[in-house]
Length: 522
Image 1 (tube, one colour):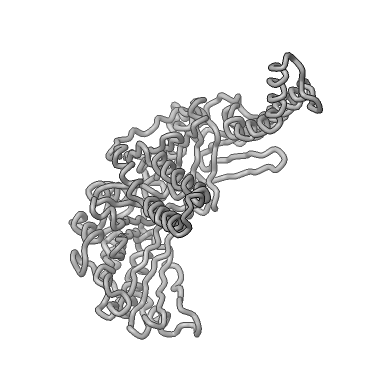
Image 2 (tube, rainbow, N blue to C red; image 1 turned 45 degrees about the vertical axis):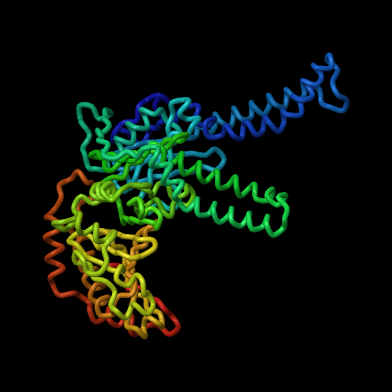
């Protein structure tokens, strides 16, 4: 038996028979486009005949259905949609317990989903334009190993969505419920540390790859007009022009009013013009961070930051917006965001080390770059390609035209592999890759010396194994064990394990194969 629809979802108080419904207008907010499409298709001709007849003094055009028939069809469609919307609302319900979030939905095809609260990786409060009109929001959260689709509750009252987000995050953090008021959960306060101005957003959009594509398209159109001597060919490029304009608009409206805040719940991102999104990434959920800088942005000192978070996947369906934690920022702003994602960089001079990772070359700040033999296949970037291991993370640096720095916490190392093609084999080089969760960041160190790669492989496997064992609980408010830095440094100074098998992986490759996976780190 479910509680009344307006009952507040308790924090760890829902029993097996306690369920809650989404807002009654949720089906309409989700399906209003379909309603308008049906009304347009069936009602356009009827309305045209109606107005034509009124203009002619009540005489309708022959061979057309009477007005009452048209209105009956439209009315029947409204009734059908109304019933389907009601059933959709009636069969969509959710439940929050101490350990799980349950969501049941579907009328003909029923779907039941359950997620462990402690495995929640990120939570978003999303408000599409129409939902904002009704004061509603969608609660969307990703769970580790949750597959390609996130769990959604659409739609709730905005205050209820925020309160439910706070309840789930508090439970995921390991905070016990207040026995005097278990259903009362106060949203954790936040402090905005970075906000992008509209001018910065416009500049980043105009100096993005969209403009490069637009310039190439314009040059091709101009050349075609000159070759053919006819401007009529411009009509064929109208869809492409509209696509470029739409890309500009989407980038601007997505990054508009972008703010980065910090709270006990983790890093919070707020952005969007028409559709607003409040995104929360709890502590320790970031699997890898990637900082990048293109050649045009280098003149302005701008950087972009992506993250890999379990559950986000490639984020292809949403254009990769959820994996962006800083769409455009200066080096100082990038350092601030990086500090929020990695509070413990594992070095005493993090600004100098990460600056060398972003802009340095050679062995500055302890980076180990590619050997001279790499000049034969990477003549421009061989001194840029480098790595450095801190007490808490591995830093991978590469790229000349497009500079990239990737940071992977030791405990988030999924597995390691070495790759060696025929040319690299002749030069004694190898690529070293860390496997992370699906996402835009692909940590790799190109063109390493073979012996150095073997050593890094063994050391990183040992660091990852130790870091996984001593990594604090997924519930980040619980007491942490001994300091990570000291234990990882101790493990790093110990003799590397499994050195001989690692050396054999590259040199005893399967014939015809150019890659060999070393398997997951313990």
